[in-house]
Amino acid sequence: MSLYTQLQRRAAANNPIRVGLIGAGKFGSMYLAQVPNTPGVHLAAIADLSPAAARTNLARVGWKPERMQATSIDDALRCGATHISDDWQALVRHPQIDVVVECTGNPIAAVEHCLQAFANGKPVVNVTVEADAFCGPLLARRAQDAGVIYSLAFGDQPALICDLVDWARTCGFPVVAAGRGHKWQPHFCESTPDTVWDNWGLTREQAARGGLNPKMFNSFLDGSKPSIESTAVANACGLHVPSDGLLFPSASIDQIPAVTRPRSEGGVLERKGMVEVINSLDVDGKPIDYEIRMGVWVTVEGETEYIRNCFEEYKAQTDPSGRYFTLYKRWHLIGLEVGQSVASVALRGEPTGVATCWNADVVATAKRDLAPGELLDGEGGYTVWGKLTPAEKSVRNGGLPLGLAHEVKVVRPVKKGQSLSWADVAIDQTTPAYRLRREMETLFAR
Image 1 (cartoon, rainbow, N blue to C red):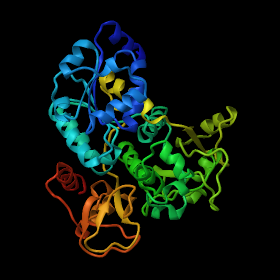
Image 2 (image 1 turned 60 degrees about the horizontal axis):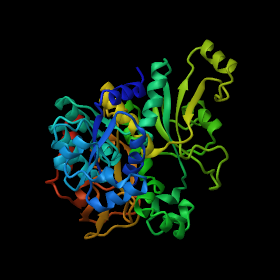
Image 3 (image 1 turned 45 degrees about the vertical axis):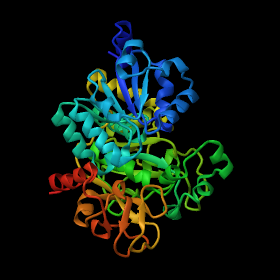
Image 4 (image 1 turned 90 degrees about the vertical axis):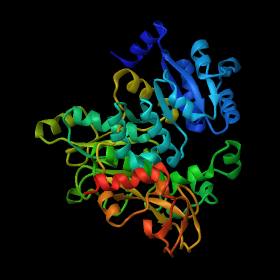
């Protein structure tokens, strides 16, 4: 039965999925914009550091004031409204919340939110993929031990890529490569919040008008977010990662099948079964026509002559040999699609992507020479960017995960382009996020 039909039945029975949202920023607001149009879902509670800002965002997306007037979660459940507060612990503890959507974008906080939700028997849709990138495999295990579901968020590119990979494997196709698109030039890894808009293609006035966060946008531009999302995909789908970081090969959509082949056959891959990111700029930095900058893709192999003949007969765009075919979505709609995860988790008991292994990691890498005493400012900032690294290599080198490189003091010199290690920093070892990561290294990296 379709998810939509099941949602309609829940609505008719006055038994909606009761959702609690932690974090009502841009991504959360996009989901909230869709909730009034979705049958069988009741957004019962929102927890945000600034309830006033959450209310402002709700008004921006079209919520009526009376929908935000519940005085408690119990009151919200009685009257069908939404309770807004800064108390995330009350949200995850409430016995009638069915699904928690973690949407803060703060990886250290997100780990604590997820763990507490699991402890209270709550499934989690985790939008904060930065947390999944450095401890997703153990978060998944903790959820399983608690008898609940942990899921990546549909609308974000990793879950969409996982969906394409699942399609391919379910149809019997070997997955050769999978990934997303991106606008990339090598010097972008040095980009800071001061330079992001010139590189992104917006004026400072346009960015200010839209209330755009330069640090967040810079995390996409400098390669951190593509590495984070590729890590989530590799760990969820059991795919491999390049030995020395993403290559960002340039290609139009119709060239992806040829580019995402093994090197021995004219492509860029070290082996079959890898993640990669396709560049929407050519080698000279000029935009490519028919690019996949905002999309996702999977390349599959036609192993037999019959299958390759079918590709040809049905006019499928393949590589020149006719052996490799790419299926893609050219766009993703971010938070507007999160309802797919909420429904899948609540109605089918199925995640829309979840870590099954630890193949990949994202290691904090210096944007410039760093001196002892400096503070790292994390993803999208002035000091480090995230480099995709095989998990085995990261553990062997004691790599510092990007998700924990926030407000951390450097204790010895680090050269530009050097990936940082635990020994390069003084880090707070008391946080649940730190402890979970170190435990994961012990459990998985053997």
